[in-house]
Image (cartoon, rainbow, N blue to C red; front, side, top):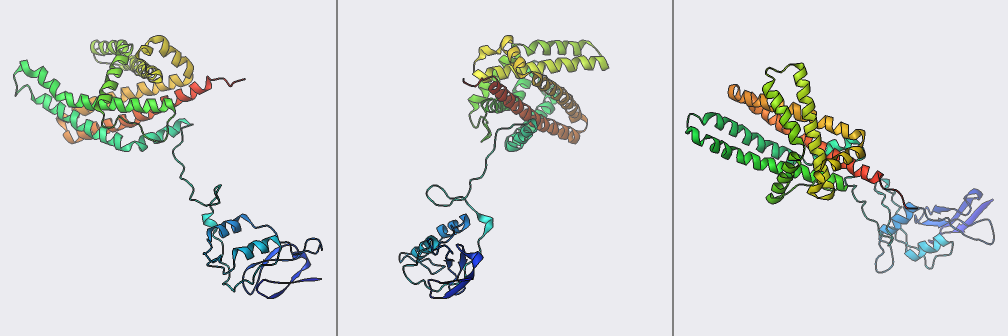
Length: 372
């Protein structure tokens, strides 16, 4: 049996039985046509429009006359054909329909309009290796501070060595202090940047890179907080390590191991003291009880942070001493070692402070119990 029906353009069409109650395209005008159903109580029912066809019709805005610019058929005629009714007026002859573009499928909003999907921004790190990308996001600060610190420290070391033959001995300590002042100011800015990285990790911020900007006072305040956190506990381990290295003579393997352990305790305690201050913004949290509570809360991750911080501090300290020695004998190699030391130190310290802040944020969330 063959189903016979008429398109809105006047073309007589036929379809097989299995095509009943479906939609097709008229070979003359190219408009969608509803094939009648075999059931008498539902003549000419058409299938629903697919989501892609609805998006395509939404993109084609009708003209003031009510006709679509491409298809040449009125919106009322399309709606009537979709509902299975006869079109209100004969449709105009139009060009064949264009194929749909599946590469640019956009979800319609509540008002029916389609907009370009928003670009997914940076998300808070969930794995430790995700924090390795944070120094690359702050590359302009890492490279800029490394270049400035390399130039200042290298120039200060070279000029300090030539001072005894130029200036009287009584003015030598003051002149050396003046030479190292710019390097100390930039080092304070570095402390402010690392503190901003730690605070952003503790707060769970991931959209932007935090840094002091042009606020030199914020960097100086960070330097004061770093000094207070150092004097609150790490200074003891640092003093013991300095005295041991000074009086041990030529260090052997055991001496190097003892110095490395003291460096690990100094760097690790310093970082956790800074974390205690950054979590609540109070200097009184620098006490050992608060630091011990943070270490207990982080668990094994506290040991990882202390080991990484101590290892990085020890190796970069040795690399910096080697660079200072090379500046006098082979300046090119000395400048290269000094620049690599500062760049590597800034990169790994930024990663480590971000990692500690993110771990502190996640561990604080684990301590919160759900409401009953």
